[in-house]
Image 1 (cartoon, rainbow, N blue to C red):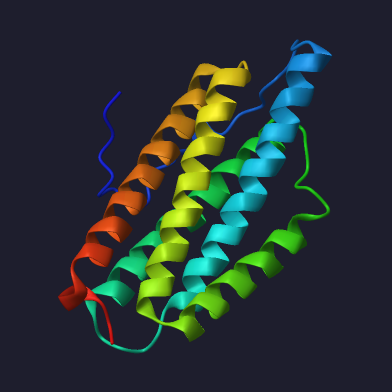
Image 2 (spheres, helix red, strand yellow; image 1 turned 180 degrees about the vertical axis):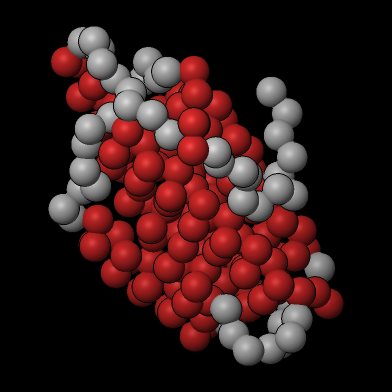
Length: 174
């Protein structure tokens, strides 16, 4: 299913938020819980990576980092919402992913724009792999599957953007 990756924050209506998972087998719900915890934590990390990479310079890299941060915040909210819809809570260890994102973001920023882009490429490749794994291995409800597919399409979009900027030195802040 094709997705418009220029859409940063899709609309969410009140009637789309609902209780999920009633009557699911315990093993199915356990896989959903593990997957949602992982996806939520990784999106927290992604938000912090991008947030810490943005500088004050008015350039295309900062513009794209801001767009990516905003989009990753939407993904984080997608999974936090789904956790509560399934009667679950966010992982108690999610703060560690916040810290890792902070370290990767600031560390790459200190090493310069090329390292920022290479870190983004690495992170987005990992995200695409995780989404693919969870889409294959977990029996999702249709609406949640669609959210995962849209969010994975966004990650492919970020990956393409970082690879393009890395190949165009004139677009990098410096």
